[in-house]
Length: 119
Image (cartoon, rainbow, N blue to C red; front, side, top):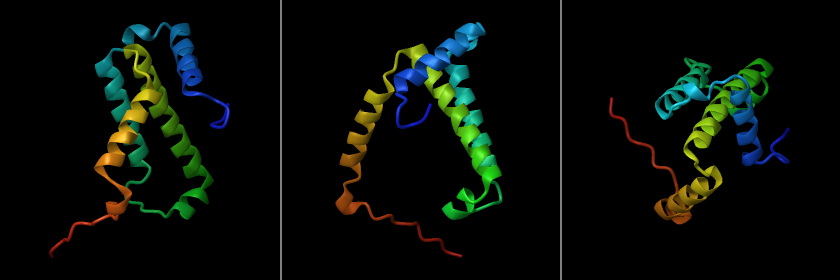
């Protein structure tokens, strides 16, 4: 599998089959799935705790790249599982969200404005 030739629907099917084979669906209620997404997201954040690397530094660190990829895959697996449980079409939801964000943040006014900190 790779991003160029694998659809979201295919990934949803893979995780659904994986969970069925283990009879795990009974544990996959919306609350626990959402908690699992948050926990895995925290594990991703932990990789950067007290460390503020550039993109180049991260890409040059094979161990860190493997760990990041693994945590992202965990997050994705729970997201896909939750979408399956609730019948959510992720592509349609993403499309709606990006359209909303384009209206909220037009490119003409998209320059980031960092908050001013006073010491």
